[in-house]
Length: 68
Figure (cartoon, rainbow, N blue to C red):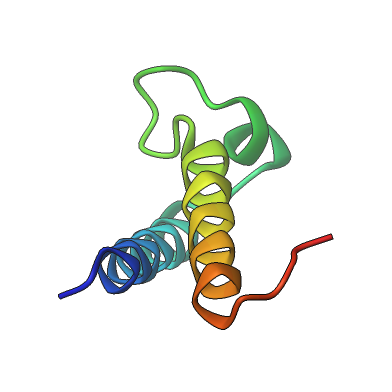
């Protein structure tokens, strides 16, 4: 599995965890943006966006395009 595929797999796992948590408990804006350290969604948004950015950069590098 390539590094890009591993990152995409991780993103999908994170999405599944998020949806499951949301269905069971609901998600507030506070949960999403500033969840405390002991919360299951702690830094979820930051980690997910970091992975998405890395995958996007990898895709551009593969195609030889420039990301604006």
